[in-house]
Image (cartoon, rainbow, N blue to C red; front, side, top):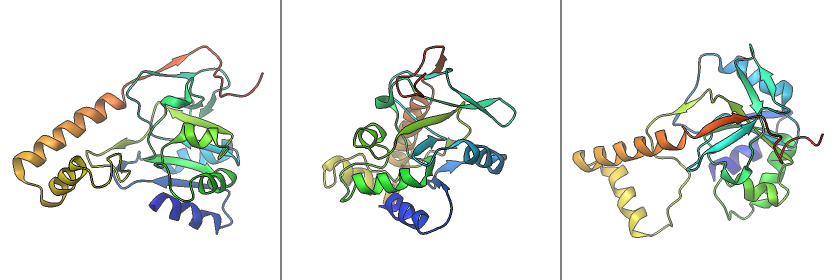
Length: 199
């Protein structure tokens, strides 16, 4: 819900690009320079992810990449959009924000269902900042992947609320291990992405 409210707020402004971030994200010192560089490159109907996760290995294409800042990072197309997850930190052009609201009203999917949203025409392109320049604290994401009302969701909510020492520490360690696994599965390849620009 918070993402949708942020999209609506963005659409009420004159800004052409907006940066969306969850409260567990750690930003680099040069975030302003990075966002300004992205703003010069992003299209009106595009999503740019500054953080991404995947349970499977993911490759990003060197073809049609665009250097950012001093060239140490760049904008790249993913080779497989279906593997892209995470809505922790990303930029949207105005048409992309309009599209995301259109295809997910009423809410049917989590905010990081990028492949689904793209397939429904919410936005035309998605690129990533690689290497990732932001990271996440060991917090529970505000995107709920557990079925509401399930025993797993109830127990997880109880642990987060009351923080019983041993159980809360165990859950925190598990989340940290999972996070490390999800953010370390990326590489660059020389192939053209099927999601990139048409040659």
